[in-house]
Image (tube, rainbow, N blue to C red; front, side, top):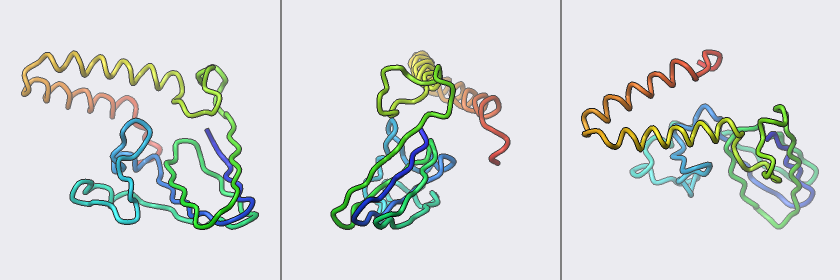
Length: 152
């Protein structure tokens, strides 16, 4: 969900990454495997250096808008109090009714991920060369049908 981070007291450093850079963030679920974003292990995570970071420091009274889907890392530089305000902007049927805090993917995205997991399990039944070929075909199909032309 979209989010306002309101810094009441203290100071925080916030680093944001666009959803367009997801391919460079080494995602495991909704989290990045790159834990030290200031000094990443580029041998283990070589593509991380391609991700464009947006960074700011919030002091008392500052407000930062964090759009839905943007990855963020928040580091408290001194003791403080921050408040987050989240809101839903998609139709209510897009959200999981049991998701009080807005941490789950929209229901259609969750269903698609489950279907993809089943498809990958099915592909695993093929010999490696065939699995590789059909997986690449699936990726091309997803790119053709699902990637937005508006962000290229």
